[in-house]
Structures are given as structure tokens and as C-alpha cells.
Image 1 (cartoon, rainbow, N blue to C red):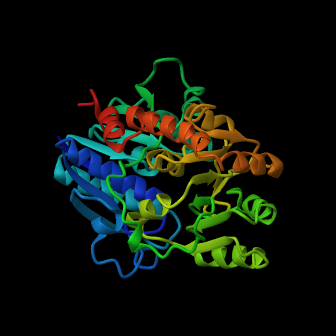
Image 2 (cartoon, helix red, strand yellow):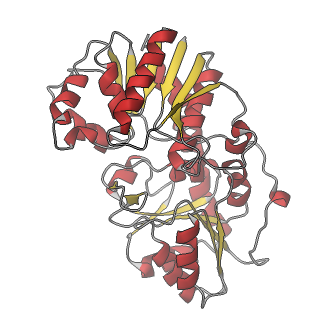
Length: 373
């Protein structure tokens, strides 16, 4: 099948959505499909100094990437969408797959078969687009609607009668960690000390302040913080300057991240009750499906995670230690329990088993496309 994947991502970049896009494209190609990734072109927003974009993301299967200039003007996504649809029509694909609501809107006005994948509840936004988005879901050429969580799916379905269109839930996913090379990383932790790792951005609601509080009370434990924009790393380094058991690494290439995760005994996901995307971009705690969780599961490490209702769609008391998002005493108690290897192992093994059964990129791509064309 000939597929064009339209993404609202800068490739390469440091954003999690770009990882998601590259991994889904890799998985679709691995299923035997011919694929072109259609995305933004913007030198200001792209990661500089990347010679091989596929190596940067740890993607082994190559595919065509075409970029359309993202104009710095009001309504830029509409201009991008029009150019993207023009390109799609010229290529006559069997399917267009998109995670962008504006291109999806334009696709609904064509005869091109398409799938739209939602990562936020765009149908609820105010303004003149709301009725147009409702019309999108009734378009004859919409083959499937994919939501990243059941909670998000319900935010859309409440606007329609049951069964009006084909919909499914596909949580995020991760790659198999085939082999790690710990010699290639600059590890800062102490020997023979419990190693706790946090991976990802350091935006508001990610719980870095809770990690610092725990580090203050657990001096015999090392806390490794991998990821974050430079300004956020500097801010939290200043906040933790009085501690010598917390280490900040900043951004690490996606292909190297598994090597860092493998050095950790426990992986932390201290989401707060409000979780913001890209520093006040939008609040996602009610419907999110964090890439981090599935990468943690694939690493076969014990997970301590905030007990947020939407995360219960994936995590439970058998595959993770779930604790109150903002109760530092619960986090400290959970960390102390993890000093016992057998305690960590039971969570790690169950999470890994769940990952293999349900949350690989290959399985996600297969389900997303099954029966569509």
C-alpha cells in the first residue's frame, strides 16, 4: 500500500512527537508499505548538526521524507495543509495518515482515503472551525479515527451518535531494546548506589520539584535527570544546587536514550495533577498517553509513576508502583521499597510482558492500518 503520513513535527528535533512520527513510519514500512513522510521545513526549529536523521532517531528502515515550508504567518497551518493536500493529490496514494487536524479537515473535502489520529481534543476548540471538525468525522473518505487513550476517544464520541464512524484507541508504543552499550554514555552516578532515572522534558507538571524533594531526604540514592531544554535544565540545576545526589544531563540523542535507561534500577514518572505540553502549550493530564511510559516498560525496569486516572488504562498495581502525584512521603516510601531487587523485578517483568503483548510500534502500526484499505 502507498501511504503518505502527514505530521505536525520538525524532523529532526528534540520533541517527543517527532520520535512518535519516525517510529510509526518505520513500523509501517516494516509491514511492507511504501511510505512518504510529509512534514514541516523550518531551519530555526530543526535540530542542527544531524548528518543522518534515521541514525539520530535509531530508525533502521529508511523512507522518503518531504518537507513543506512552514510560513511564519497567521494561519500557517492552513497554508501547510493546502500544500500537503496538493502534494497528496499528485501522488495518488492508497491512504493518507495524519495526526494533524487542519490537514485532516482539508482531506475531508477530497476523495483521498485518510486516517486521522488525535493526540488532543481538538473538536472542543471554540470558533468557526468547530462545526467543520464535526463534519470531518462524517466524511465518506474518513476510514478510521484513532485516539491515544480511551479518555480522549470519549471526548470526541460525545459529539456523535454511537457507530457514526470507525474509531479505535491505540496508546503510544516503544521499540524493543535489542542491545545497549553503556560504555558509550557519560554516566555520573556513584557505584553500588540505587540509581533512579527520569527521562523527558522538564516542563511544568512533570514533577521535577518532587524529585528534588525526594533527593533531599534520600542522600544514599542517586537521581539521574536526562532530557530537557537548556533553559529548563539551568533552572532546575539552580534549584538543586545544594544537592550532590542529583545529576542533570540535558538533551540526549533519542538513539542513545536506551543506554541511559539501562543504567537505572528504577524509572520515575512523577506527573502532577496538571501536565502541560511545551510550557503552557496545552494541559493534557485527562487524556495523555506519554511515550515515556512505554519506553520505560520496554526497558524492563521497575516503574514508579503518579496515579493519574488516564494512566490506569495502561498501568496497574502489578506492572508499576502507583503513588499519589503530589505526596512526597509516598514517593520516598516507594523508592525505599525498591532497594530490594526482587521487589523491583516483579514490576519490571510484568511491565515488559505487557509491552511485548500490546505496546510495540509494529503492533500499533498493524492495528492502525488493519482493514482500512
